[in-house]
Each structure stands twice: as C-alpha cells, then as structure tokens.
Image (cartoon, rainbow, N blue to C red; front, side, top):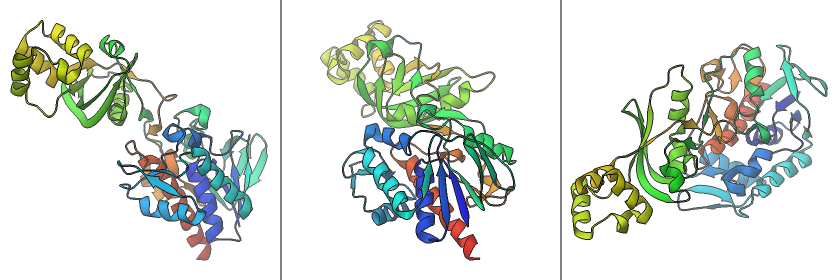
Length: 367
C-alpha cells in the first residue's frame, strides 16, 4: 500500500517514521515544496528547537517517539523540552536520517496543486497516485519556512470547512510612543487585552517593549485575541492594560512613592519618569497608572512573523485524524484548527498528531 504525505515538517516527518515502523511494508513518500525537509523546525526555539513541554497532554507519546530515535533531550525550569545538543539541526538530522534508513523517499522542490477523491495528487513535478494521503503542510505562518496555506486549499477542495485564519503567537503593534522609548526593556507583569474597555483575556509573565509595540511570551499568548478582533469588519478599540507591580496594592504603591519620592526603585528610571509625567506628578495617580498602564494596540505583526496560525480545518469533520468527507485522506499538525500557547505545546501537538495519524492508518490496514 502507498501513502503520500504532503509536507516534510514536524507532523509529516513524525507520521512517515511512525507509519513505516508500525507498518514496515508501507510504501511512503513525502512531498515537500521547499528545497529541504524540516526548514521551519530549524527556526524554532531560536534555533534550539523547543520540541515539547512536559505539561503538554501529548508529552508522553512525544517522548516515547524520540526515545526510539535516540534523541537525547533536556528540560528547563519551565518544562520546555529541547534536544540535548541545544541545536534544532540535530532534530532535523535525526528525523531525516531515520527516513533514509527506513527507505522513506522525500521529494523536495515539489508543490502539490490538487488532490481528487481518487487520491490522484497533482504536482508541478508530476502526478502521484496513493492509497492514503496525509496533509501535513502547516498553516500560513512564516511562508518562507514552508507554511504557505496550501493545505487549507487542498482540504477545502475536498469539501472541508476552514475556520477563520488569523496570525497567532505573534508580536503586537502599538501607535503609542512609549514602547519605542522603552525599546529593549522587559517587565514581569500581568497583562490584559481590553476590547472596548472590556477584558477579553489576561496573562502573567514577561513583556518586552519594542520599536513597534510589545513582544514576549505574554503578548504572544494573547495575540490571538488581538488578531481575531482586527480581522472583523468593525474591530473594537483595543488596549493592553499592564499591572506593572502585581505584588503590591495601589495603596502600598502610594505609600512607597510618598516614602521614596518615585517608582524608580521598582520600575527603573525611564518607566518611572513616563508614569510620573502621565500622572502630572500626582502620587495617587502614579500608583493607579502603575497598576493599570494602558497602551493602544493597533494590531499584530501578521502571518510573516507569527509562530502559528489560529483556525484551520474543522475538527468536527474528522474521525480522529481521518477525513469524514474524503476516504483515505488524513490531516495532522497546524493545518487543523487546534492551537496552544507558547512553550513547545504546538510542536508537541504536531508530533503527536503525526504519530496518531500513522497509528490510525495502520489500524485501518490491519482491519
């Protein structure tokens, strides 16, 4: 039997290897539109490849998979899992080497343009026929690394519903001058996203000020709210509200300013000066602003800077990872409408869904 996997990213490579290990007689080919497999993996975790998180519901399966491949891993204090070498290239090499040893063919520089219900796959380098097709070509985030949104088109052509697509885990833009003034500074705070003054989400952690707005894990984890808002015809007014001193009440901050004259000892000179000017010197106002500092948010940096895509192929139209609408078609990874926060959770799902798609294919073969 022949399986063709579209996309040589995390989910596609995991699916191919697991499928061959479980069903050794399967003839497996991966089609990749870029010149190399795993290009997006090389960029994850700032080149270190944050390949999983110990808090992910899929961690056990992911760990077992990499243990079978001989990939040693290390875990940081936040539960983020990296290759022991701290090099993303190690992960890609382990996966592609295993594909070679198993006889899995990877065809690069080949773009899939269509799939019909007979599982005839049209590409710009010829036509392929398959018994099973796995769509694992990612979302729309960072198209230069392979995710150009083509998987959605392929699934839509087979009748699947694609939920609204927006950039996620992406930096926020602001027209306020203050992030530019504070560029490079980081604060540990509680940040809320307000839409027309109403809280739409909040998270505690590190925020990084930049020349365009806000970055850092907190800003990126809340970015799906901002993206969804600005994707609407009539978006609501959007603000980020930062509680810059979560450990102290407004009254305690007021007492602190009265005692020491400023917030410099807590927030540093630049931020303390900004807040003093905004409060026109008023001590109670300085304390109030520090507990609820608002910045106008104008949007996000978009798909080209996003780590993942929010939205995708509706899970209601899949039985596990097999299409209910097109027999023999499976999907895994980011092309599905399944997203998580920063920290290796999305990559955990990519590996896991590829593994599970392979298991589902083998189970069907055995039936």
